Every structure is written in structure tokens, then in C-alpha cells.
Picture 1 (cartoon, each protein chain N blue to C red):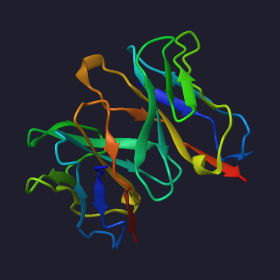
Picture 2: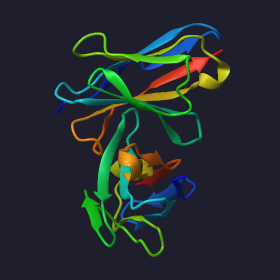
Picture 3: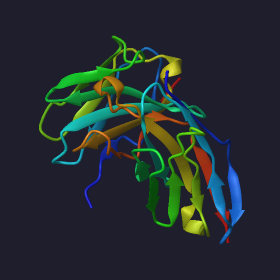
Length: 112
Length: 114
């Protein structure tokens, strides 16, 4: 069964460093998303991407964040200068229809 | 804004026990409601959904009924198994304004003992 994959599973970085989280969505899906979950808190929407551009983003997704689909398979989330409060589990998702999203296993980002 | 409130966990049950995980919501429009499940080490999976009042979503022995009058979507299963141990997320998608982005609850951890 096709699935969304994410790498790495765990990323440790120092405050102020740039990180890139990688996702490979399901191959025939058209919509791509990033979410995050700070430990003990809710899953929060960051950004959605369709037709090679951002279609929607939340207040969390400020200028420190960017997304890219550099080729036909990868979907990346970049955080330019990480802060302690960026420590969270980051989930990628993809969908063919907008309300039925398939999620990856997540990348745990730890900022020290 | 829209929000989802679900019961605090962990919920600890013995195998074959009856499960209820409560979920209530507030929404400005007429949302669709979802339950997602996250097994250890895996991503969130859509478990079931309901798109209008009195609809019952069901899958893998789990069910939930969309109750508009009580703004609730409680998850139930008659007889849980050890393999049901996971984190369960209630979510809504309020398509007002054309957005389908779901709003999630905090998740409820279920632990089932043999």
C-alpha cells in the first residue's frame, strides 16, 4: 500500500541553525501539507501546497519557514533559523481529495 | 474559531472492554468530523468520518455518530483488542470559505492490556 515517508525520523539541531525536513508524498497525490505537534499539544496546521504554490498557511508559518517541491517526488519544509520553540513533531501529509489526507510517520525535531 | 476538545488520556482498558473516547467541537459552519488513529511509530491514519448530522462513521469495529444537538462525535468500540493501543485524534473540517484544513484535538492515548 502506498504511504507517505519522512526523513529523518529524528533531527537534533542547535538554535539558529537551518534545518530541512523531507517528505515523499504518495505519487499520484496533488495536495501536500505540513503540520506540527508540540509535545502534549494539538496537531497544528502549518501550510498546504497545490500546483507548485502555497495554497493556504497558518499564522505559525512565518518568514522563517518555507516549502519546496524541488522535483516530482520530494516535498520539503525548511526552517531558516531554528528557535527552541520549534521543537516538535512535524508531520507531512498528502491527498488526492482535500479532506482525506494521508500522513507520514513524522520527524521529531529537537532544538537545543 | 473552530476547536475540538477530547478527553484526557491515557485511557487504560482490559482486552474485550467497551471503549468510549469523548469528543466535542465548536465550529462556525457545518463541519465534517473525523477520527484519526496513530499507531506507535506511524503517521496519522483516517479511521472514520461523518459529513452531516446523524451520520454514523464506522471502520474496524469503531463507530462514531455526528450529534449536532450536542456538538459531539464520541468514538466507541464494543470490544477492544491489544492491537487497538494507539493515540486517537478527533478532528473537524469546516469548509466555510473553501478551506478543508482539519482542526485537531490533542489526542487521547489508549492502552489495552491483555
